[in-house]
Amino acid sequence: MARTTTRNLGRLSEIAQVAVKHGFGYFFQPRALRDLFPGGAKVDASVNGARSERGRRLREMLDELGPTFVKFGQLLSTRPDIVPPDIIVELRGLQDDVRPFPFADVERVIEEDLGLSIERLFLEFEETPLAAASIGQVHGAVLPNGRRVVVKVQRPNAPRQIEADLALLYQAARLAKERVRALDFVDSREIVDEFARSIRQELDYRLEARSADQFHHDFAAHPHVAVPKVYWSYTRARVLTLERLEGIQLADLPLDAWSLDQRRRLAYIIAEAWMTMIFRHGFFHGDPHPANIMVLDPERIGLVDFGLTGKLTDDDMSKMTRLFIDAAAENVDALPKRLAELGVEFPREREEEFARELRELYYRYYGARLSEIDPLQVIREAFGLIYSMNLKLPTRFVILDKAIATLGAVGIDLYPDFNVFEVARPFARGLLIERFKPRRVAGRARKETFELARIARDMPYQLHDILEEFRDGQIEVCFVHKGLDEFMQRLNVAMNRLTIALVVTGGLIGSSLIGIFADNGPHVFGVHVLSLIGFFLSGILGVWLLWGVVRSGRL
Image (cartoon, rainbow, N blue to C red):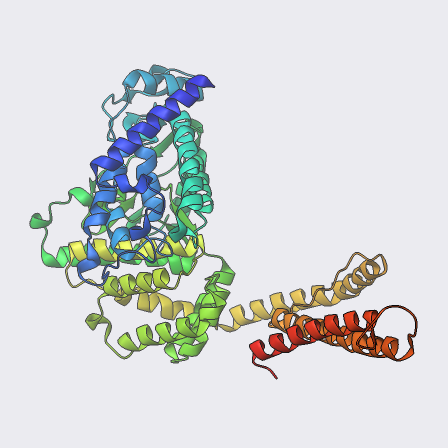
């Protein structure tokens, strides 16, 4: 325990030093971080992607702090609801690229997970890794049957290092929530929870293998897209073995050696592959980064690294279809409702403002040809709206937005006139047509009929349960009336004044009766002493009551 505490203190000291080095030392003061979130310094995110100085320094700081913080920065780059657009632009430049670990550790992990030594498992195994990342690294190898493969091996200390850094992130989230009022709109612990779930899933390579297997099945007959086969007998929680794709990473492609037509064709092949995933399969690769796309030949690409994926259900597709229909029909006022159906959360008291902002964004581009629209500019403006309105997006759509934005940037790097919307349009049109085919309409009608029948069948039982709870006193009915507190306060004041008035009246009447009928006892100027005391006290209370009424302004 003492050793863990000492290690955490050392790591905290290191983080503080790196933060100070990059100009973020004031973060450790109360009420800091304000300039990175709403209420702080404003940056125009619409100009050239708004690559800001603060974003660059934050990216460099996270990069220096190590793999876990790099991945945390990558997560923040997918949260336009809490991070300003200019910082998102910079955080997307974070690359998960670290120093490789020794080959002896590779041998030990493979033997522990697969139960045999490398010599008995593979004909050949390259000691120098092809790539190294925060959680593992990739080596080339040859199976006994002669098949060339890549073997992804997890770092021996990855889980322990990740858990230690997660503990520090949870501490930072708690301190931010307690000390930084500018972060009241953010559930910082929820963000760290989301990151913890994501990175812990990456520690089990079998989950990535299942995703790769699904993509391999979806693109089995595709003429332009290749997905590596998973070798399950050589795959475990810390070891992943995939078919090796012979090609060059898109990031390393010598663009000068390719003609403009070839680059245009390649850009549209890549975009069409992702549109096929999104609109036809409903299961898509979440990070179309140039390092994750292999160019096998001018007409064929390969996909690698399946750790980040997104899933769209049939219900999501139906709701997206309704959104497209309303957008095409200029029914802008219905868009907030359609977005809410998709799970987009926004403050209800700002619904009119949200509708107005959507209307302005919509009519800014409505009627323009796709060739006249800059997709990245549209995405940046949408992210700016998400941030300014404090919208909360479902994770699957955040991943989708990130994928499309990354795809647009990759396409423009290849071909300057590339427009991802032009690629998406026929797929979206096909989605609309597919949704309204008689077979699909009949299927949805059948599904809705069964659902309504189930509700009708369950209704008497639910009504019986409610009546039982009423009988047993288990149901409490609460009424909330806006403005009732103020009314009750005024009623309380009026009742208090009425009570005092009754006391004054009673005092005057009682004193008068004493003065008339009391013959015995002390008298002053012919008036009984008790009567005088009663008149005096009643007079004081009456004056106090009159003064209170005059001060309130309500005579």
